[in-house]
Image 1: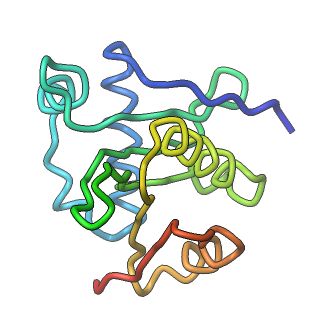
Image 2: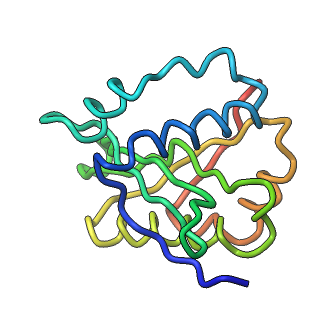
Length: 149
């Protein structure tokens, strides 16, 4: 297996990010709802008021997955939290620990930023993802949930 490296995305990665988003939308049977453009991503991810962050997993020179997250806030904790919006591994690269590496990367970001919690949701029909998340990642205050279709 190729060595996996995870890198924070930059504005140069916008077209790659869009292609990964479209692959995720196809997998989730929501391709018709993936209407983001490169201009949208450039502004929302790398513009002056960036709203989310992205990390990309690479095997050699090939992008094999990505994670997108943003901060939320807990009034009860009085601290920021981190919401994992998307975690996706290209189908032919699944089962090699790449998803775990991406999730661990994002969790390290949350810990480094002293987030009070990390949350995500999973489509209720996505059994492989549900098994993945139940495989030891509901740690302490880190929480997850299932969402409807």
